[in-house]
Structure formats: C-alpha cells, structure tokens
Length: 56
Image 1 (cartoon, rainbow, N blue to C red):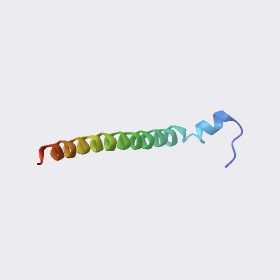
Image 2 (cartoon, helix red, strand yellow):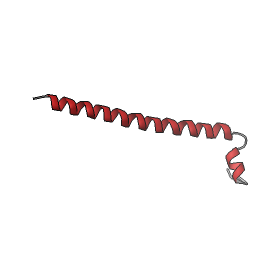
Image 3 (cartoon, rainbow, N blue to C red):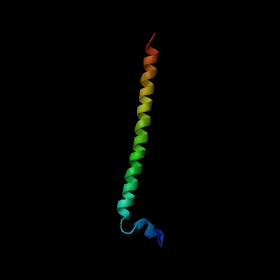
Image 4 (cartoon, one colour):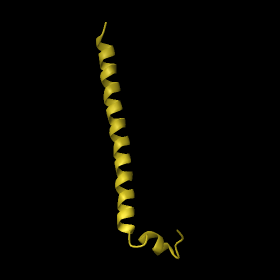
C-alpha cells in the first residue's frame, strides 16, 4: 500500500489510531517485560550470592 504523504501514512486510512496504539502497547509491554526480567535476574543472583556466602 502506497501513501501520498506522511500524514496519510500516520492516518493509515482512518485506522491509524488503532494501528499506532497497538504498536505502542506492544512496544511498552516488551520494554516492561525486559525491565522486569532484568530486575528478577538481579534479585535471584543476589539471593544465590548470599546463599553461597552463608554455606561453609
């Protein structure tokens, strides 16, 4: 599908609100997933390190 202008590209044939909100929600979910995964990874690593230091 070809667009005549940049504004037409963002409007997406009057479906722009749906299309761009879907991209925005998907992108924010991916960013949140990465952030939460990294935070959980740090937590688990810290717990393992503390357990390692406690063992004789």
